[in-house]
Amino acid sequence: MKPSSYPRGMEAKTLEADQLLKDWHKNGECPEGTIPIVRSPQQRPRRKTTPFSSSIQPDVDASNNHEYAIALLGGNFFGASGRLNVWKPATFNGEFSLAQIWVVAGRGTEVNTVEAGWQTLAGRNNTRLFIFWTSDGYQRTGCYNLECPGFVQTSNKLTLGGKIEPVSRYGGDQFEISIYIHKDKKSGNWWLRIQEIDVGYWPGSIFNKLSDRADTVGWGGEIVNSGSPGHHTSTQMGSGHFAGEGYRKASYVRNLRYVDESRAIKDAEPHNVSPLVSRPECYDLQMGNLKNYELWEILLGLYLVWENGFERLLIQSDNKEAFKRSDGDQRTGCYNLECPGFVQISNKFGPGAILTPLSQYAGDQFEMSTYIYKDKKSGNWWLRVNEIDLGYWPSSILKKLSDRAEIIMWGGEIVIQDYKAGTPLLRWEVVISLVKAIGKQVISEISGT
Image (cartoon, rainbow, N blue to C red):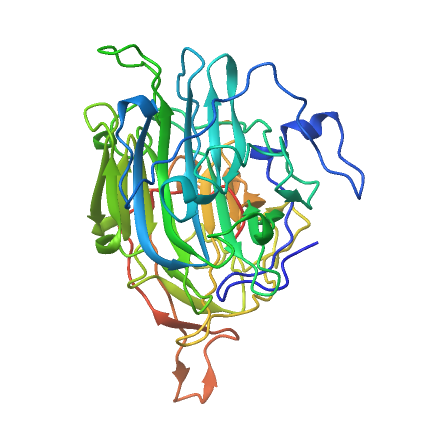
């Protein structure tokens, strides 16, 4: 079962859950018509409380015992999305630490929320996927995952409450999950998509405020502080490091987006987002424009990042070019698989495949991710396209690149007509809508787009 429709700009895709969320598949998969359910743990996370009181402000009441670092956006919304950097923060004394997306309507005891993200819990040495909902301000209704009637899971690809592995390492590899919550126009249900998989939905009938629309969306972190008065918990948020340390050290959320009243996906503009922190001396949140990265960011104890939506590299082509030269474009090398060289190992698609659909002027935009990196052990140069390891160029065919690269470039190239000869110089064309050199790419995505 899938939503009856998707917001404009959101494609209906069917992809396998990547290894980040497939730990339980080691013991097999669920047959069609069934879903995976986590065995009831001995330790359960504490019930959540509301950061939404009489206005869009975090609840800093000490009796709450919950602390927040959140970026909030007010208005009329029909969904929200983001990509959450995954860590395993230290937690103590039955407390939890999480990073998530909130979709909210109402205030105080009338708060309705649907929430999704990752969570660590003291006593459980792992990070887990979770969802939550409430229709009465976290009083009696709602629960985590599938612990009460409410959320209807329709996919058997992911486990709510399941482990997320691997997690990001301080100064090392970074991992993230994509989360998308949107309201189905026809049914009124709130659908959840994780890693491009439609996991299930919260029925619109279980809500009173969210039965119409959301008035607030949020991205950020939350922890429980059960310390006695005058003593603060040691439970960490995000990576456990302050936002000022930056990428690979502070946790982040990027690509902050929402669904507007026209059911179109929009980037959250930084000047409209309110960063709110309940205890800044312990958990911080920073906002700034990293122009050299062409990204906007909010740095939390966690740090939040989203693409700004201004000039982006837009290249339309009818070929994925896996191209090599080892003699300065003289005699060696070729396109795709036209000569021995590139070794393709994936059967998902190949160099020379047609790209479709293409971006439209002032319309839907499409992109592909490309990653070329050298394998430390073999020395081969691997090609990853849309998170699929397509194959590699053996280092043995490349004299200079057998060691390392000294130049990297981003951009476009075209072939012009040879008017003297009256024939094209080559049999392919690449049309460039806009070319903007990007100084440094710091985010590597972990799921297909």
